[in-house]
Image (cartoon, rainbow over the protein chains, first blue to last red):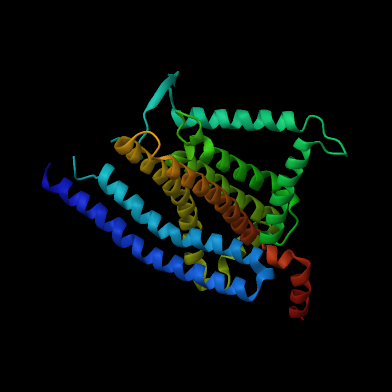
Length: 81
Length: 234
């Protein structure tokens, strides 16, 4: 195992772990805000939850990007030979 | 461990390599077509159980399209409904032993997202006309033209990566857990996978509606907003 492979594995772990922090906090805030809104206005729960799902998917995409970057570094690394 | 980014061909059909996702995709298409034909063969005014379930499904999809796009659901029902049902069945096809969901490979997701991309342009031009559709790129002002063009590409790309990342990570995690722990341990993860698959199918369909709705301008077409625009005109 050469230096590039070791660095790749560390980089993949760092990408996923730090990349998950932001989306996790953001999803927490989004769900909290949606719960607040549903508690105030239960009759709007349908619209709110649909918007929430789409918003969560948008936020989650950031974490998925990090995952894909990690996979690229691990499996499609152009420098690993 | 094999890379989730590359696939090996199963067999060759002449010069064309055929991979496992292609076979599974065609099998799903065949099953869906057969089920649709069989289920709609005897439709009646007093619905049977199968027909009632079908009508409920179509009603739900119609309601979602109406709520999201603020317009008549009929022109978009075939596309959005097919995309939703296909992605759902494809995500859940991992329940069949030995089958890997085709959406866990980048190629299937790219094909689906390109269909959505093409449909956005098609419906936009059909409803607004070519000039009217091009004019939507200059909203709210001409400064936004480069950003709007870039947005078309990036949102298609994120549609690809979102579905691929979610389904593939589920398959990958189950593969790792199976190699570590064996028999009954991966079952909760597989249940979570079913939930993720359903949510992702729903989100893919909703985003399809949102993109097409933005292209055809569903807000302006709805009756409540059209009189507002008429008031704004003079």
